[in-house]
Image (tube, rainbow over all chains, first blue to last red):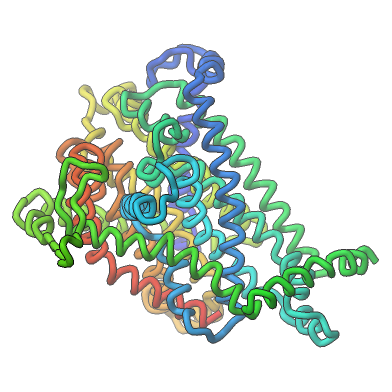
Length: 269
Length: 316
């Protein structure tokens, strides 16, 4: 018994090293004075300075943040409704259709999703004249769609775990279903809503492939700018950007995890 | 006390919504079902119909760059279905070998992800509560930070003057650098690395439910740890292995960024081909035909995944 646990522990730790080594190397070399990745030229923060003076990156970051914010809000509305319907309404005609459409975006290769959405937008413009051209709006719609799928998964698992007796008590006391939803269900699943929103937000910030298909002139997102720079080779400026993103994301995840834990504790009490 | 206050405050809002539904003649229930269903129908399912349609049209120098499928002229409806794009896919060996290579790379990557992910999932599932939450967060954290930048990180590690070669040469193990970038090896590393959390999480969810008394019973009856693993843990974790493998395999088949950044010109993956058809050749009909062909390859794994998840949902 002991020997196996030792094997598992070593293999597990190696696995975590595999997961984190690239991230650690990104962070370390963002502080490298030298432009070369292998040569340590001393500590320097000059790449951060250059990053903050790069109008192309800053502009793209601003566009990406706007898109991520709006699409995450849309995603959470659609995702909550889908999750609620799938967990609480046991029988309805389009159930299989809806559950299929909410899971499939999770695994659909991005090139297919991107191409199909672009062709849809082109066809829609021809038929009903909207959306005019491609740009921020089309990226938001696309991101909201796959963001909703991820949000729905998180919210679904929370809804399944939820104690139904409180909702039942409320409706026994005469509350209408819609009031039960807003006063009981929504507050109870708030932690899941927060992490679903954050996940949709980061996925949108991160997406390169779908955005490349459905974007138009003047709406290059941050990943699109990073991709065009990375293709030309390794630049420490990108390492600095990566470090900032990793820092923000880690803080966000830790805060979200703490809120979740707090929420769980409240539930127990 | 404060709860009571919000109850009263929110009442008009919920009544307003209910009133709105009643006015347009839909029950709230139907409305709640309709919103997500319609959204996904329009922005997820119908696009595939459009792709299928355009895959049957002819490329042209126009805006958009394909000819319409039907034309209504002098009272006659002319429908032109062009299956030439599909014939083209079967005739040019490029597409066939790209499909085979994508499936091979995705398959082996899934296997390696399972080899690395299983012990990690097992370790997390057996860890004490506090450690378990931290370890789980450590698995999820990379998934939240930029995928593109994490793939980019491997360029610095794998390239000829990169970290691995630098370290090995400094240690004197090798004299000349090993070429790792722009090879299939780099693509494997990238895919396994990127999709590892997708393997670990369903495996963990499965292993954490494992009844430990079964393991104790087996070892009490004299089974070696290895036998216990082979006859109890492994068979019971098959649903987790299945779900995790599909979650890695399906997106890996269509992966574009990893073969583009880490692979070489010889790395033919179907996602890259689709991208090039669309962006470089501007041949939308052929790109659509490639997408439809890819969907046919993936439809069985996607349906299996759906089934596995439904079974899992019923269990819990």
